[in-house]
Structure formats: C-alpha cells, structure tokens
Image (cartoon, rainbow, N blue to C red):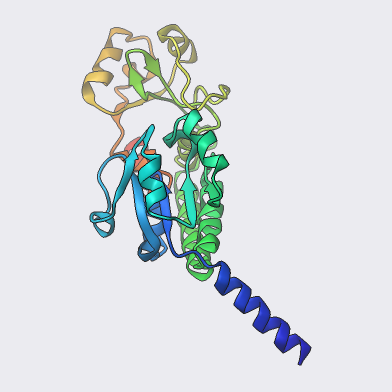
Length: 265
C-alpha cells in the first residue's frame, strides 16, 4: 500500500513539474524538440536560418545575438533551452536572474550530442522518445565509424572563413565529426571553438584535404601547390550546413561529409 501511494505521489509530482511552454534559444535546439515529437510544447524560438515547417507559425524572440527579452517574457515560458553562443554575454546574465528554468546545451562531441538529446527529452517529459532517438544516432555513428575508419587518419583543414582565416578547434563538435570520417583536424590542438589561424600555419601542417563552404575559397589555395591537398586535387566543398546545427539531423550531415572525404568507401 505504501509503495503504491509513493508511486502515485511521484507521478503527481512529475505531472506538476511537466513543462508546457518552452522557448528555444537556438535553431539546433528547436530541431531537437521537433525530432522528439514535442513541437507542441514550443511557444517561441530564436531565429537563425530557415525554420523547420512545424515551427513556421511560432512567435520569434529575436535572432542570433539579438534576443528580445521583453518578447520572451510575454510568452510566459516555463523552460528555456539555451545554446550559449546564440545569446550575448550581457543577456545571458539577464537570463540567469530570471526565475525561469534554463537548460544549457553545448555539445563538444557527437556522444555528448546524443546524451543531450536524452537530457532535453527528459526536460520535456519525452524520456522514451529521447532514449529511442539517441539510440538511433549512436547506431548510425557506429556504422559510419566502422565504414570510414583508417589506420592512418587523413589530415584535414576545415576552413570556416577565409578573410580572416578561421578553422575549428579540437573541442568543437565538427572536429569530432571529422574523426568519424577517418580524418583528423590538423588544428585539433587548439582549444578555441573557432580559432583564427595563419596561412603559414596551415602550410606547416600540410593537410591532405581542405574543406570549405564554396569553390571560391578553395581556389585561393591553388597559390600554394606544395600543400598535399592542392597537389592531390583534394579541395572539397562541405556538402551542406547541417554540420553547423548540433541536432539529430547532424548525424546524417556527418554521413554526407564522410562521403565527400572518402567517396570510394
């Protein structure tokens, strides 16, 4: 009898704590909510790029780095999903002073992404869906690692921007995505998420593959024919922007990246 009563109390407590009005402060987190089948809980989103169809009619609370705090408060959320880079430092401090619960997600690896999918699902009262989605993500990543593994990883320079020259550091999730593809980020020793580097440092590390968002940025490297990637004609375009959004869809974006890096595997 006591166990039964305890169970009822726990269920009632969980129901009382269940969130009903969620605001997502990053497109990647909005995508995770949709992937969990919980878009009905969203009452507002921070914009940054094209929205999923399921979220087109939702109110906006601003754009990357420009949070409309008054608009956010008017939506009366009972949970905020935050990626720190999407909101400026001053506004992050303002959010801390609110009484609204905040879940902060900033995965640095694909395993952390899977774990955070499960954690967000628990926050939303969708724990079962979270476990199932995370299991599918882990299974797909294991398949990709098996398919693209190499005894000697390819040296890759991942170019984020060219003027000035930016790349990804070792603690950035894209660096982990490269490892799934049998590659190694030549700047994995740098700790900043997006460090600025010099052309000379790239030449010194002699990448076998250079990845960039468009052909014009890649063509600039042809001025240095001594670089292995140039000599071997392995200047490759990143296939899509899915790698920039750490959500469940990123795993398939990693698969497309692997196919570009190693098309014969």
